[in-house]
Image (cartoon, rainbow, N blue to C red; front, side, top):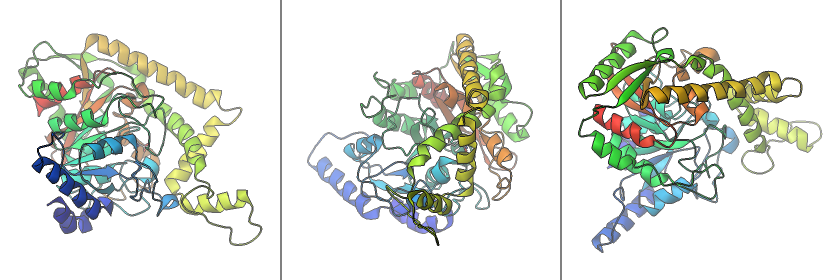
Length: 454
Ligand code: GLN
């Protein structure tokens, strides 16, 4: 049914870069056979899933939205994909994204825009616009996203889906094509909080292939979602982050946010205001740290090892000139912009001034979180300042594009988990997101509050 739906609507939505019909049907048949034989199955066995194209999948093309990886077929699976396959979830295909996960609109994909199912003239968010549009457009009930600065949560907000960025280290990064290794985290994109919890529990947990993987059991997210669904939040302290609301937020976004706070009060939660002054510098710090790490991670795309190789049109074919020609042709403008920014920030003489200061801001943000979590069990804010904008509206203004992530980035810098929950429609009739943040390794709190509000 989902493959039929993809065939019917993906011509318009373009959520998928590759549809793996044969593989999906084969997995579904295997699961049916096991079920018929009375084998015990994972609760999500047979439930189809879409995977963001930045996650490597053995035998299925993986491009990360870039021409430089066009036609590359990985020889191995990411750990999270191994777990998905072992549990018997048919993989429907790979979803569109901003090139190397750099962007907030999916307009930076080398393979064309993905459209928002709510309004085909509008962006589905980014970088994981394909995963969000696939779920919102009923092409897939579940999807995998990755979130370095908001790429699961912001697309979730503007498409009316649930998106979760787990605690850093909670889900293995092995087999994610790295953007910024100290910030990247994969997580669920779904239509309900319980679906997200089931998927989170499946893909989460220790993996010796990832040196930053947390070697502890996954927080009890499914139990927390079930508890939350009973709608009792008595005694829970909810902190409203002063710096993440007000000026710059669309009126309809702020109105829905206030209504959700009323709903939380009605469920017995206590609302307190908290202040995280360093959050106002989060975007600045992120746009130094992320490009610095990305410039290093992307150095491997050199025309020598895998993917595209372009030889210079004239003159000698030296390694350096092949790298130049390959990267010149293979990378899009946003990727080039960030590689240049990152290389500059890391260069001798500027390192302390830029990268060093950004790391200090990062520490201040972590301290702000620690202080806020002494006053509140969870923190909340709107996920994104506005609803989905129209194609092209922010494409020529990188700074305006970067502002979409003002509320999501602090969580990545501190490594804490975050969820975006559908929060009704703004006055323009478009979906709004409600963000919940919890302390590191307390992902279960997101699910309790999310399920209570749902
Ligand atoms: N939109 C942010 C950026 O462009 C976040 C991207 C992400 O989370 N991958 O960097």
